[in-house]
Image 1 (cartoon, rainbow, N blue to C red):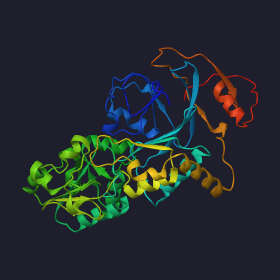
Image 2: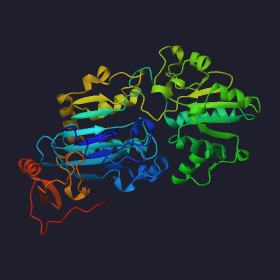
Image 3: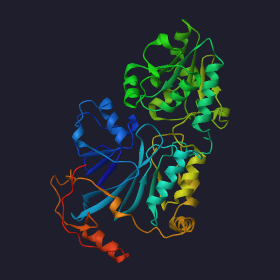
Image 4: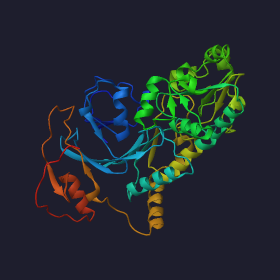
Length: 435
């Protein structure tokens, strides 16, 4: 894809359409309440949460992409100035509420941006995601995969989130006379908190801003801001530190639990006082982890007050391997370039990439389905309103024709004709409507 057409989780000027995978801070750096550089595409749930993260944002710039549906977008090719159609499908990334992957198709080929994601080996959500993604690829190779490679290292193997959640419940049960504090971000780990609440039949305290998020997500009864109603509190991760735990223990016995897939060296606790100081800087990992490398898949006690449990919303190494084996992309690039605990995916998975591997996946998919899946059903594509180019500063020429009720450019239409797609005339040529 040419530069100047689409940006994913990048917010500088120069693109015609901007796509947000989820609302975590490392993916919204550069986005603000005053941002006005173009249309911003996101999931429906992200759009619902958007005003909490960016109060005063011009919500008319948001465009909602329903998960599992192809959407059609007409952009301008910067090199030629001609109109080109891009299809995009949002797929559940299972990372945090509203998080999605984006699969793009067009004259440039086929590209997948995962954003942050966790597709576990087992589970209905992951199985549905895999089926949806393979169906969306059809008989086309995946030309490039932009992959969440946060844990692209065989050192990082951890259990499913349900198993890790059970470990946290066991810690709470084994400390019946202690208060419990759990470090979380402003978004994410909701399933963990719900699991704890239901397993122990208790409410969970959250800070006021977090309670607002919980209410928007539909959790009205489980969470509270009254400390007298519960001994389990979810606190902001940035305030989870040795100093905090020592201070709390001066008033009442308190245990801290940090759900994280990252291994943290004991020396960081002793030196910094903040168990997660290094992560707040750049999502980095200590190289001196010893037997704390997270491979055991069990909770680790770092001090008298602190447990770290391998509950992660990022895919671990084995899950990344399964994901690449499923897709067999021609090329793959990691997106976690600032992390010191990852390795570029091709270092381990180059043998699963390339044109031959992509063709093998297509042939295998044909055998598994017992039929050829060579085109998208045009009737299922939703139209997106025409985008005003932030580069050209004006609407593009209407250089499109009607193809099965979908406006497409002539080059794309000729490509489809050459591949045997039937072309029919439409009774009328309607303008695209805004969604």
